[in-house]
Length: 164
Image (spheres, one colour):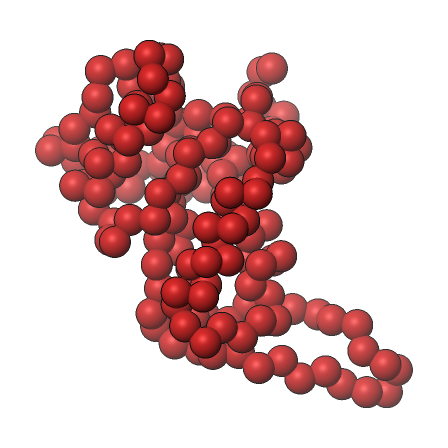
């Protein structure tokens, strides 16, 4: 499985949009600095995934996520591929039995297929939208995570360097 954390918030995602010829289209956005995180692990081969919305991002939350990931998949051995963020490589990170961590090379987000999922979410769920609150944004993310089918995630997160 590939793991990554995504940050979502009031940073506007403004993109192109169809409009009548000669006209323009205005988009109301809400810029700000409030945000939230999503932890997700996706298997690009079969589309299985597991996500949590932690209250913050640190080693303690990463340890909690790995424990919950292990509980979710039961007795399956898990190989989790992730970047080298500080809370991923911390000596105080608690990695449960049956979970092995494999680290991507530094500064290579393009090698993590979960990044494709974050791009899709931002493009299809947040672009040109105004949200009243951060809770409304969280609801949109949770709905997208719950409705993401294995076949959708497999097609979205497929990478040529992963042998199937």
